[in-house]
Image (cartoon, rainbow, N blue to C red; front, top):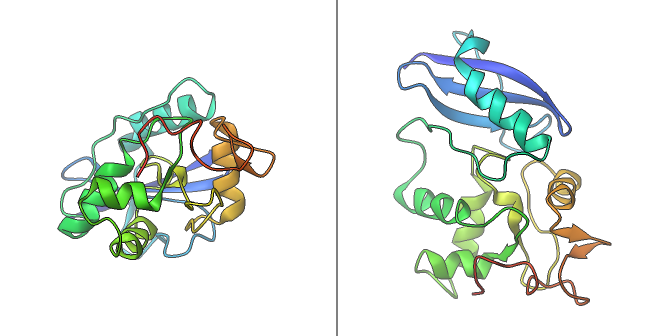
Length: 184
């Protein structure tokens, strides 16, 4: 596998986009100082021309013209369970929020599986593109985001899912008013 990368200036800071040259798929989208984020390694090649579609879609997203990404992902990332969890993230609509419990129910591990779901979400290598920022605590609080809580709040505010320190939609700050993906 030949790993390629480029950088993209965004409202969150400079994003590092990493891909697999052979498949043309994304491996990672990281923000500066991201917990567990990608760093450029020896042997990687800078190839901005291979990320034109990703750059266009990110530009459209940050301009408010794109609500769902349609980018190819490199094959083989994550465990089977992580891929199921990451797939559930892509069902959460723009401007919506869901709880970790909703995601756990969606992948068939409700209850005790919430912690495992949180761990899988924390290992999502495609920040912004695969919308893990749309998952909040059952009490409506911002919980865990590899890019940091400020960036999570910024993304949710940008999408209209967060206002005045709580999930948009009800005074208690829970997800009820904006959770168009369903409750769990």
